[in-house]
Image 1 (cartoon, rainbow, N blue to C red):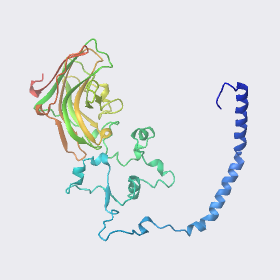
Image 2 (image 1 turned 90 degrees about the vertical axis):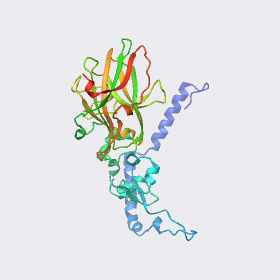
Image 3 (image 1 turned 30 degrees about the horizontal axis):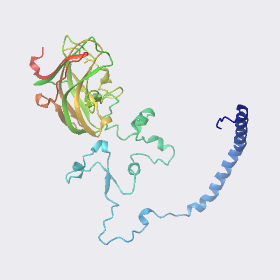
Image 4 (image 1 turned 180 degrees about the horizontal axis):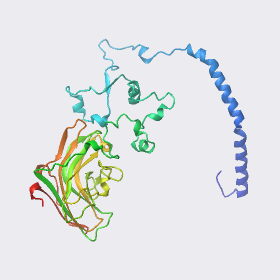
Length: 351
């Protein structure tokens, strides 16, 4: 009830009490509600025999009229698969040599969920509480209510917010040329400041089953932690958007990359890292960078090699294996970060 200049508070209070009384009168007591439910159930039971005699023709049973003799009915012969796995490259999917051996056959009209239920991937959502065993389309919702465990993808998907499987951990194997990135954090830098140093780019797509892996090492005598590798987008050159943020980008040891974990072996020891890419798939991977945080003053000297995408079949797609893969740019000194250099050096020259 709105308060107006010509209404007193007493009138308003009386009106509210009247409304509350009416609402209370309109709501039946629990006993009446139970009685109404019981009556409804009895009526439904009485009608069941009659309902069993009813029949509804399926869509397929309805004849298609007014079709030319040479018409091609697009009803059968369809197949579906998750774009997170197949990607969105229409030219590749439409090519004659593309194989659909792992796809699900279906007819149209239908929905993706209906097709998956028909193939037994998910249970019938209309039976019992089966709808609580089917993940939602929202990843955040699934994580909040622990629905990811029901997804048919976890055995294949390279989940970005969970540690990569330990079976993917491997011994680092740097060889030939390695990438060296140097950056100095000044006394004026603050913990909230970050410097993104681009060093490579990849225009291909990544899929929900892909991982990124690489070998990394820090030089003795410099800062030991506070840096991390991350793909990034750069619509705003001053504020590039990192792919690895809080809760996203965990390696096989369960460490969030955005926190800048130090290699476990310490300075002078190479470490292999593996991180899932499911959160970004399917998409073009974009630019690759080394990120330095302004936590502590000092100099970073970081080495990287064998940056590549690890596919579910064990094959790899290289991103940085040597000088020919370097894609960088000059970075000017600022009051917080100075002396940034990116170059490839022979592995044998590292002391």
